[in-house]
Amino acid sequence: MDYWDRLGWKDPFSSSQYTARQQEYSYRFNGDGVYTPQLVVDGRFGFVGSDGREASSAIQKALRERKIPIAISNASRDGNQVVAHIEVPAPDQNLQGGRGVLYVALADNRAESHVARGENAGRSLAHVGVTRILKQVGTIDLSSGSAKEVVLTLQPGAGASGSRVVAFIQDPKTGHILGVAAQKL
Image 1 (cartoon, rainbow, N blue to C red):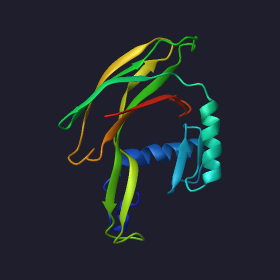
Image 2 (cartoon, rainbow, N blue to C red):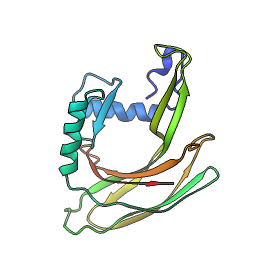
Image 3 (cartoon, rainbow, N blue to C red):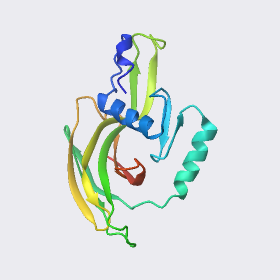
């Protein structure tokens, strides 16, 4: 989210794209706007991210939901390019011709930022799972199989402590996550 950048220190991992995504979830949850820390689980549950009890409950509910399988293979990095094969096999049950939006993200396993201003001025913050790229690959027909070759271009410095490729399918109407997979690079 880039809405904190106006306080005199630019978060090196912020993005207007992530702010827009968070604002859309706030709208879906009939919220009073975006805030930090906010946690969204499975595209179904949104709440204050520091609420451990609520997080545990939402994760348990999400684990009970049946997901569409996604396979990531041949993921590799060559310089600033990451290539991966994403496959959504034909379902074993009829999904009634539904459609989903396939996203692919690249996330750093670990990262650090040095805060210049604001309430954390002078501190170094450690981060995990820092999304560097979030790409909407396209809409897929959930009643048939699909395969995509995805190419992502990294910014300098990304992935210095290792990375992972994450693919997920989102229901375009509800925002619910229908399937997800991750693979380390």
